[in-house]
Length: 135
Image 1 (cartoon, rainbow, N blue to C red):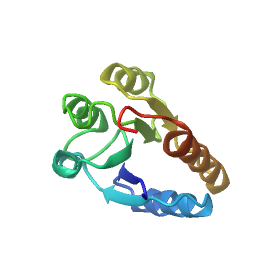
Image 2 (cartoon, rainbow, N blue to C red):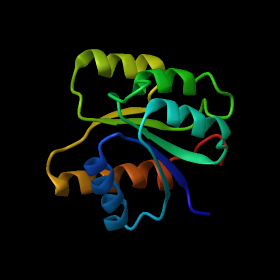
Image 3 (cartoon, rainbow, N blue to C red):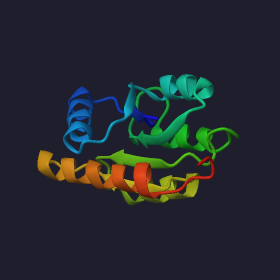
């Protein structure tokens, strides 16, 4: 079964680079891309087959931290691995993400080769090595 990854990202260039990185890493995923926090909540409310959520901090309509806080209150999503994948290095964002229940906080590298490596490592860990409660 191909794992479903929900990417909540409002920057189209970042979406393109992340999509390419999954492909380069030979990670077969069903990548669902949502461009704002409200769309993420609407989609995730009905999607019961999510393997991983990648969530930007700075999003239109609802912030990534607001989406994460909501996510952790939903019985079918509370244990879904959620990784903050963002350009923000702000200590308040990092602290807030972990307090809201993020499993990891990763800063998007500027260089595409570094992003490729980050996605390959992230995918290997969360989609292949990690055992989740639903496995």
